[in-house]
Length: 113
Image 1 (cartoon, rainbow, N blue to C red):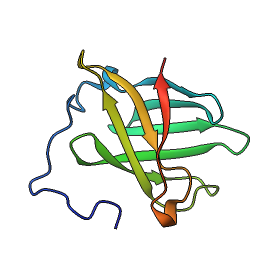
Image 2: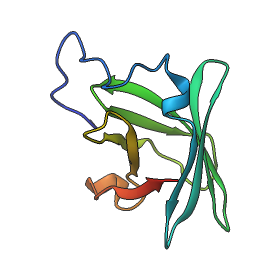
Image 3: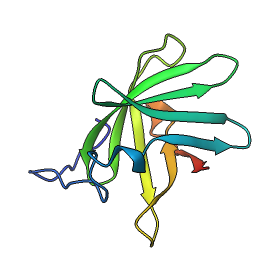
Image 4: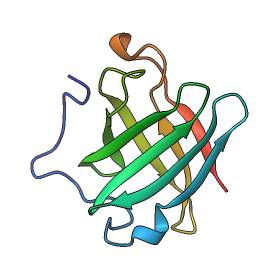
């Protein structure tokens, strides 16, 4: 289980998902490349542009925590994701669990451009 202790009801995100412009855009990591976040059919969608591109949807769990559901063959399992909101109330980075998914590996942090 990716998040074994989710409160009931779940906590809302720091920035409402209805404020789409807060989440969309480019997120960059020096080694992993660029993630493009957008909304498709009302769902938060990501595209990691690498040698083997990865597409995924983020499903809200609680607070700023999400489950990453890959739609790509190259990333076959669900993983943890998180938005980091800074003191000014804006999304500053996106964390994706791209390594050690079956072992609870750390998130890789992409800075919002």
